[in-house]
Amino acid sequence: MKRSLVIALSFVLLAFNSFAQNDAAYIKDNYTKYEYQIPMRDGKKLFTSVYVPKDQAKKYPVMMDRTPYSVGPYGADKYKGSLGPSSLFVHDGYIFVYQDVRGRWMSEGIYEEMTPELEQHKTNKDVDEGTDTYDTIDWLIKNLPNNNGKVGVWGISYPGFYSTTALLSRHPALAAVSPQAPIADLYRDDAFHNGAFMLVANFGFYPGFTNRQDDKPTQRRAKGFDPGTNDGYKFFMDMGSMRNSNVKYYKDTIRLWNEMMDHPNYDQHWKDRNVLLHLHDIKTPTLVTGGWYDAEDLYGAINTYKVLVKNNPATPVYFAMGPWVHGGWARGNGDHLGDVSFGGPTGPMYREKIEFAFFSHYLKGTPMDVAKVNTFETGVNQWKSYKQWPPVEAQEKNLYLLPGGKLSFTAPTTTRNDYKEFVSDPMNPVPFIDGIDFDMTREYMTADQRFAEKRPDVLTYQTDVLDKDITLAGNIWANLKVSTTGTDADWIVKVLDVYPDTASANKFTKKGVNMAGYEQMVRSEAMRGKFRNSFSKPEAFVPGKITPVNFELQDVLHTFKKGHRIMVQIQSTWFPLIDRNTQQFQDIMKAKDTDFKKATHRVYSSKTAPSYLKVRVL
Image (cartoon, rainbow, N blue to C red; front, side, top):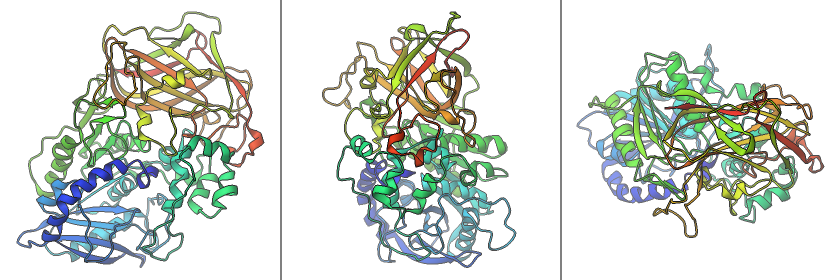
């Protein structure tokens, strides 16, 4: 969600503009735009733009996108350059509806980040995004001429969350919904990953997002933050501790930023913003879409699907995962990320054969031949269909970290406490990219990690050269046995695909990059150690004591091909992707610059203290 306003969807928007140029004239010739203030049950009015086909000889379904990012351009004579999830919808004929959600842009009310959903709505004052969606759909069906009585909702990122909450409206006219890269649990999706604060993704977002903090509708855009440099690593090191974000820059003027600073633990503030808890009694057919290389809302897509399937077994729930970054399926080709090729375009197939087919079937009654699960298998670059995710054929196995930096499915046999150790210095953190950039560059998700392997504060474990293909399908859990001389520590685990020495460049390989021995990141995740047992009740480490730290790295579908190696890297800083841990047990959001301390960390690999990854192997 965070980067969707700033950078991560910029490449999508460039492609979007090329489509928009082709569609813009067609839209003006074939659609009439209207603007409405639709009343909600509590009296607030939400600004809504509606594009209606000029041909009124037949009835049309409604396609709706609810957004905090503005439905602009404003004015009945000012048209969007493109409508709907893709160009296919524009030419097939739909009524397109865009709405500023409560408290944003031209809609009334006070905005809440991921509005807490209510289980009961006893009075007209008990409102949330589910009720706002219900009231909007009800008004549209009753007031728009030539609608066919069916409504579809879609949205990417934050609008993906509003798509999920549309399911909670349970309006009888809601016929199909597609949450795409939806935020599901704000604490886990965008704000914190296992308690580690996603610094670079959030810092620049809120100044550009915060164009109003009151109940006064506006078309005024916010002034973004200008760091004065493109070197994010240096900027955030110079900023110092997290408290300096307000001391030096924001001056306590941004309410939503302060909500994150004030709630580093998974307390009631965040629990109220976990929409997964409400996904029961859903009857609406749903298509959940995400990208394997989504740095923001991978968790949201995967877990929205899993919870929907678990809680609503009789409801048609579809799942599509491609080799995409945040929103990368929407307009782009999806044929590569950074130096890594996916063998050809993947976006067009999704848009036509899955997304368009899904909505056309449930809104217009056309035939549909879409598998319940469509996933792209990276490494071998092919689409795979399953009846459910993860595939029932996938078997759990342990991939062990062994003495000497080995990695194997065979457990360690030594009984002595073998370990590898390193000194973690918060004043010299490991960068998350090999280069200079201020933003969360999307390419880091597949980037070569040889630059990190060279550092003394990064541990490396790898298999022998594989004598057969190994496919991982499903989630990965890190099960580490560690110790530290401090009282807190972050643990970052990266799973890499190491290319053979015979690997050659593809057409997307940047100049000067050698693909021989390339260490492609496949999955990575951080864990703030004090949350190892509970995100609500942090616990200090006992210095020197061997302690289990277990956490999820999320799902993959990747084949490590014969001749490749599997590598695992472990480190304790990942800057400025996540904020720095002081390595003392304290509220890091309120820490001072003098609180950062060096610490020595150990990762154990013995029979009595095994460290391993729990994986699912096809």
